[in-house]
Amino acid sequence: MPKHGRKPTPTAITCALAALTLAGVAVGCANDADTRSPRPTDQTAELLLQVTSVHEETGMTLLEGPTFDEDGHLLVVDVTAPPGEPKVMRVDVEALEAETVFTDEAGVYTSAQFSPLDGRLYLTDIMGGTIVSITPEGEDETVFFSGDVDGARMHPDDVAFDEAGNLYVSDTTGFMSPAWEEEGRVVRIDGRSGQATVLAEDLPAPNGISFDEDFAGLWVGQYAANRVDYYALNEDGTQVETSHAAIHFDGGKSRIDSIAVDAGGNLYQAVHGQPSIFVYSSTGRHLATVTVPEEAAEGLDTATNVAIAPGTTEAYVTVSGEDGGFVYTFDALDEGIRQSNGG
Image 1 (cartoon, helix red, strand yellow):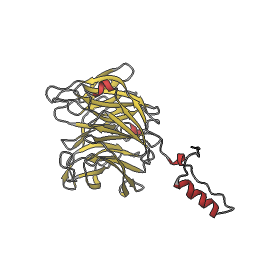
Image 2 (image 1 turned 180 degrees about the vertical axis):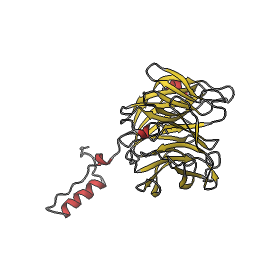
Image 3 (image 1 turned 45 degrees about the vertical axis):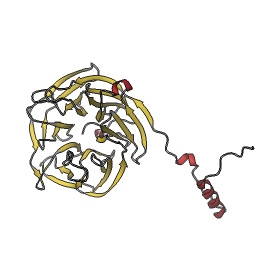
Image 4 (image 1 turned 120 degrees about the vertical axis):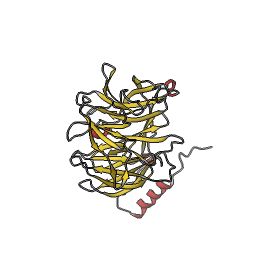
C-alpha cells in the first residue's frame, strides 16, 4: 500500500483555504506542532535533611512556610508542634543543620514570610486567628493582628506581602466543613495600621496565595474546590477588579496547598495528600511535576510549600508524613523572587 504521508488536519485545511481566498496576501498559519503543549517534565527532588520527627503529643509533624532570611538560611514552621517544642526552625542548607528559632505555648503556625516594611518574620496562627511577628532571631514576639474581620473571626492560613508591605491573607474558614459551605475569604491588612478589609468572600476554603511576578494580581488556591483562581487587582491593590477560575487540579483525594511564583511567572502548586509539586505556566499549562524518590514516598504524604532561594533556581520543598518532616531540593524553572520566598 503506498505511503501518502500524514492526513491533512482541519487546521491545515482551513489555513490552505484562507490562503487561497486571500490571494496575493501573505497569511501565516501555525503548524499543528506549534500549538501543542509540550509534555510535562518529571523531576525527582533530592533529600536535603530531616528536620522533625512525629510528635508523641500530637501524633504527627507538618512542616510549612519555607522562607529565606537575608543570610541565606531557610526558616520553616512545624504546624503541629506541641507547646514548648520548636515551632520555627532555621535550616543551614550548606551545613545541613537545623536549630530552634521560636516556640510558644499556643500558636498553630501555618505560614511564614518576611515583611519588606520592617524585616520581621510574620507568622499566621490558623487556630488562634492572629498574625504575630518576631525578629529574624525569634525575639520580641508581637501580635500584629487579632480580632474579627467584618464581624467574623478569621482563620489565617497563608500570607503574601505586596511591595509596600501590606498583607494579603487567605482566610481558610470552612476548611473542615463540606465543600459546598463556602465560608472563606481573602483579606487585605494594611502593613502600617493593621486595618483589615475583605477583598473576596464566600470562597471554598482558600489556602495558597501569591502575587504574580509583577504584583498585578493574586493567585489564590481554593483548597475545598481543587482549583486556583486569579484575581486582577486595581492599581493600589485595595480591590479585586476581575477574577476567574484559572487552573483546575485533578487531585483525587489530595488537595492543593500553598503556591509559589518564580521570576518567569510560573506557579509551583504544593499538594496536601501526596508528596508532589505541580508546576504550571501563567497560562495554565502543566510544565513539570516534582516528586520525592519512590522509596521515600510511602512514608511521606504531603508537600506543603516551596521556597526558591532569591536570585537562584535552587528550590526547597517542605515534605511531611509518618516518617517525619523533611526538606527536599530541586531545580526551579526560573529564579526565586519575593513571590517564591515564603507565604
